Length: 188
Image: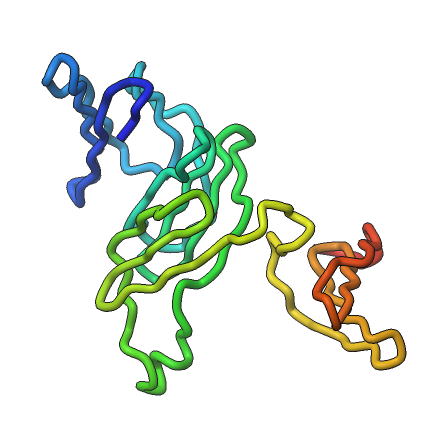
C-alpha cells in the first residue's frame, strides 16, 4: 500500500509488479524485469537496485511511521532492513535457527510473508510464525553488522564486541554502552 499515491502494488512469481490506482480504480503500471530494486511507481521505472539477498525474496513490508524504511525476507530466512533514502541495508539477521531446524528441534520456518506490526515489531510467517522486536531506536544500542566474537573483562566487568571496524565496550551489569573505539580493527 502506497498511501501518499493511493496506490496498491502487488508482486507475483511471473516476475511482474502491478501498480493499481485505487482512486481511478485501474491498473496504472506493470513493472517487469525481475530486478531487486526501488521502483518509482509514479513513473513506472526502476530507480535504484538493492543488493544483499542471495535468493528470491519471499516478502516485503514498509515500516509504519517512516517513509524510507522497508524490511524484506528471502526464502532462506534472511531478513534485511533497508533505508531507501540512502539506498543501503541498515541491518540483517536470520529469522530462524538453521541448526535447530536441521537437528529436528524446530519446525522449518520456510518464510513466505513479512508484516510490520508497528515501528519496532515485525512478524515473519511461513510454516510457523516468529516475531522480532527492535526496542531501541538508538543505533548505539544495537549492531547493524554481525558480531563474530565477544570478550568479557572480569576486572572491569565489561563486555567487548568487535562490530565492523570498531570495538564497543558495554557495562556487563547494566547493559549500557560505555564507549566506542572507532577504526581499531583492520578490514571489514
